[in-house]
Length: 198
Length: 431
Image 1 (cartoon, rainbow over the protein chains, first blue to last red):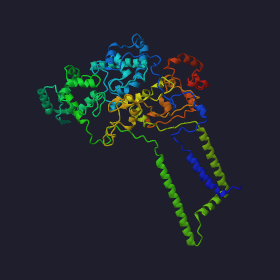
Image 2 (cartoon, rainbow over the protein chains, first blue to last red):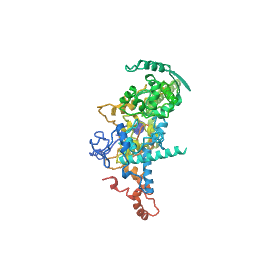
Image 3 (cartoon, rainbow over the protein chains, first blue to last red):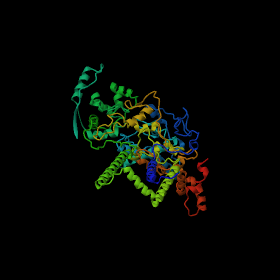
Image 4 (cartoon, chains in turn orange, purple):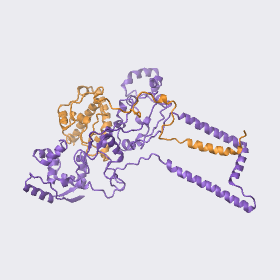
């Protein structure tokens, strides 16, 4: 069959159209997959469309966690204030200076992740969300503003939340909560120190 | 700025309150004027009250926008300064409000002077009024989340241009034919003229060769990249159920990635936060404070429709400031963007903790994204390349101390990359 030569420009035009349109990538679809069997395994993965993020069985306790003895109520708060102490394994006393520094550095990092956007880097209640007027009325850790804070109440409030602060128990392990407690106590001491110096 | 407010006479009658006292109180509150400095009241309010009270709706404590209509100034001063003492003195209103809010006591504010409290009360009256002018003011404005960008707008322009050029060609052909007729020649149709032109081109062997090469190269180029794109999901940007902006949360408000994606430090997955994590802030921030350009509430004092989706999922009643009892929780169906094939293993905790890699190294400028897209190709070549180039942070990681000493002996003077500690072994990621 003889190719009709005068059709060639038409072919070129058609090819150019195809080439220019097929470059478009539809961002809302992930695109083609080669051998989906190897990509989508039968094992259950997190966030699969069916059966994705599931809750743990009721009553299960994460490894390395203890049951928390105090209730989420004003009475529980008072009880934690009176009776809840930092467990021996998270206590800073008795650690070498070097080790203490390392633990405090980790604690600071955790504090900066979980607390600083409201409570501020110094614990003065002037975090970025407060400055942006998104969340208001975050108290300072200083004794003058909050005389009732101690290690028990700090942990209790991280665990259950208080006022407009929500519970952070789902985001932090118990060890991390105690580390942050230590760091908050340090900030409180620093704030009281600078208030006394003035 | 000093503002004067007159209090409306509105006292509640209690049968057991003596008539004399009633008359005295109503006389007093009727004659009371709240004379306060609104600006000072606002700053005191923001620092001390706003954590638990809002003006227009119930929060941890009651709404206070109309509190001066409900209570007398004397009562408020006593309550704010020491509510415990007031309760213990047997004041019925005080005990009733304490019981209503589950006996959670409000802190005492003995440091406030009478004037401080008047300032705050003046603010509760003034703060609820609609603002008059705030052109681009300090109100919160959310940038609209627009998925498409300029794409759809370009198409009509292109079509318009196409139509214009076709019309232009037809017009010129008409002009040419008119000129021909003037010269006494036969007019020619556009089609026959075009075919004459293409016949000429087809006989030109240089043109035919060039065209063939161009078409061939274009075709192969397109074929290559189409095939290379199979299984690669870079730039994938699905529409999410909630128009959540990382630019606002992680960028403007500087919330650490790990705050919401807290499992990245502990687990293989960097989990999508559950709705209770959203609620840590959105219990308080319901979007009703967002203002439009003129400074008035954008959603008429209601929650923003996007934040309301969280409330619907978890069962939160913003008007009551409480979870709805017996609500059946629904998951928010976020669409997962970063998918690795089942045949490859990747662990977030390992990269974040031991590796000390920033989230942005793989996920790109998340803190600038209104809508998240897949920044990296997530191909094997991409993984391997990073493992070849990235130096292991041995100094700050005691885990590698022993290994580092051995490696330093084995590769004297060389960088210790992930490759050198076995980061290219097949079994690291495929098993």
